[in-house]
Length: 269
Image 1 (cartoon, rainbow, N blue to C red):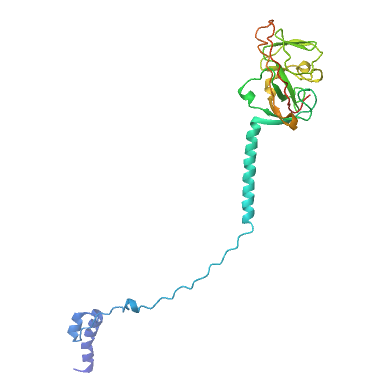
Image 2 (cartoon, helix red, strand yellow):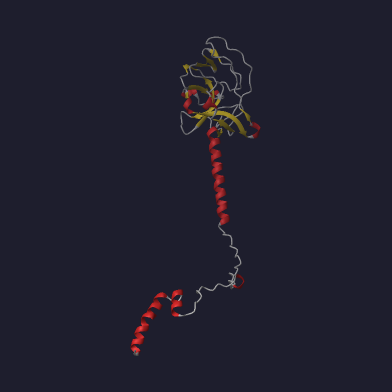
């Protein structure tokens, strides 16, 4: 056998070895090679594992406070305070309002420059009573407010003779201090939802005897408290007139005089 024949005979065996692989036991036995251990990845013992380098620690750098942070807090607190103040003001304003007297129409009980609080709540839950001191939109000038005293109520007939007032034919007792008038007026009947009002300084007051009845829809409120000047501080007292309008033509029942009110509202004429 020549050399070429030997090479051709060995070729299939080499191909088979490449196909089967050296780690095949049958191949190792057939080829006469000694058994070889399986190859595995070497794993180092835990105590021999290389130590991983630790991350270098970075010291915390303090962040400087923004110069605007304090301003934002101040602005927010200011806005909240203003909003709360406005809400309280509107709530109080809905029930109470302050006024300043201008003029002498309510002398000697109310004086020019006097300040008072007017209650709007009274006439939300009740009706005006005789003797109430009321503040209302002036019928002669919608941009002004007047202060007067309630004399005649809806359905009553009012008449004035030489300053003496009668209600349904009975004389109204003068149980509070006024500057009595000298004029005559009426008789007139007070309509529904109307009032007949007069100033305490009768001859120098623009009131129902000069411009007629006051519509109740124009009422602002009832004079309640005088707070300035200090000597005139106090709560307004409403005088009692008894049952003067109970039975027309009957003599009026005498009542105990009460001190006149000492406060008024803005403005008066």
